[in-house]
Image 1 (cartoon, one colour):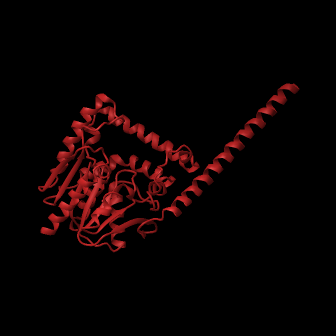
Image 2: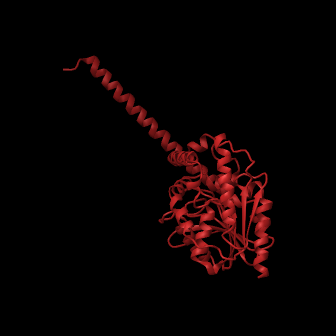
Image 3: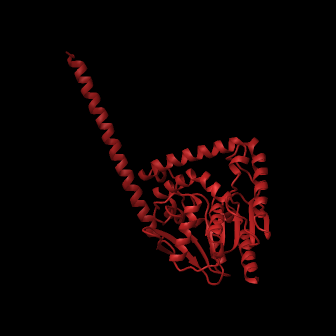
Length: 329
């Protein structure tokens, strides 16, 4: 039979652990409430531009501006919202119609029941443009993983696409041709995104100051479903690579390829891997330019991976040139 001291100790431990669980539950509830209130407040302060369009039981965000043809359609990189084009779209609208959008699950768009491969994304974009009455022809612009999306779109709907611009776009063989350690960094990024997805519903990234101070970016991207979507796109990256690899060439479509400056600092990559990774990347970017007999390749000096943010002038010029080539045909 246990003595009174042991029984008292066990009782105290149960009360202590119960108190910790109760405190953890209260903190989680408070964090969840804080996250949702903050999201609502941010979106009231920065209303969504554009419109929500039903694409079959869920809605996607589309933001169009300007007049003219062809319509330029901007597809962001992995996990990025329409905001990544905020330095480019206001200039393009002066010479043609231009649309940016949030892929399903990102930004202002509802989550999708479909997989997050480039084929699924391309089919959703097709439904979005059709249901929003944005008629072809289109010049498709894809940044990073968005390059896969626009290639797959052009393969699925060739009669709608009259030009392509690839902005430091992903290459289907990059996972094979990068140094193996680079792929290890990618696996580490997935784990980080998974952890971020686990803590975002409880407001922890906001509390720790991880969300952007820019109201437009914070209102659009600092939410659980956007982080979760980023994880799903990362998990589907290999399938998207294979889908892009299976597409045909772009024939003689006007094509502009812009790539980042290999001389820019890359602190996220170990120093001994920078040169072999850059050499492989520039070689692959040059190969992308050969997808069309009318392809060109420009290295964006003084620009990192986000050329549309570091050198928007070059992206705007490339889009203008492709649009003008289309109009002269």
